[in-house]
Amino acid sequence: MKKTQLTKLSYLIDIPLILDESQLMFAEMKRHIPFPMKRFYVISNVDRNAIRGLHAHRKLQQVLFCIQGSITFVLDNGYEREEIKLDKPNVGIFIDNWMWREMKNFTPDAVLLVLASDYYKESDYIRNYDQFLFEVTTTKNKFSVRYVQHVFTMVKKAFVHQFPFITALSKKYN
Ligand code: TYD
Image 1: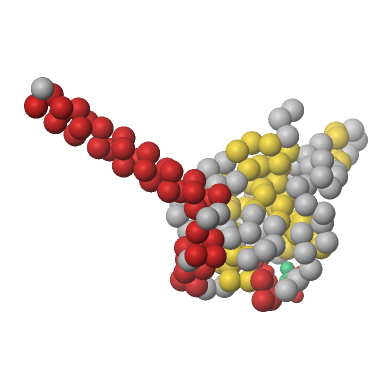
Image 2 (image 1 turned 180 degrees about the vertical axis):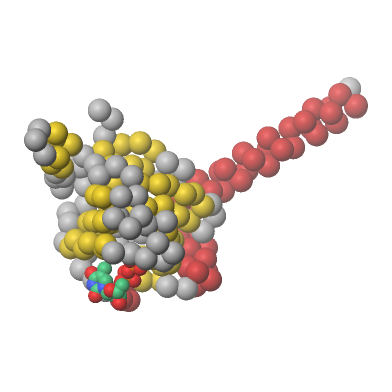
């Protein structure tokens, strides 16, 4: 079984699932969870129309499991967005710091289990999207891997886009 599966902006983590007369899942720090967990919390009984999250963290990392029902996650790194539906109890999504997240389409039975790398600190939250965009694109993070990856993608896109034009030009003048 593959332990991780890349998504556009993050990755999914498969944890072991034991099916006997019950269903049992477990996760071990380091082997499955990429940080030492300091806190967990559980969200359930969410209204079907509710949208939760709507924030990013400056430092906190999390792995989220939808251990019952299904939930759609929206991830946004300030440059790109993706939607991921979690509907398997043993598949979690890693959410890094500097990642805006929204959670929606909770089924009535959905239970979200969140493993977090640190204690609750309101000062670590960015709850305003414009503020998130501002912080993610200012010098503090300019040299982050994500920023370099984004610039690389943009250059690649620009090049691919220009390529037919360059070929046409070279044909014209050769
Ligand atoms: P929040 O993280 O905003 O929830 P969500 O991301 O699901 O929308 O938390 C909701 C409220 O609960 C907020 O007032 C802070 C409080 N809270 C704590 O006190 N401790 C915690 O560990 C968490 C996760 C939330």
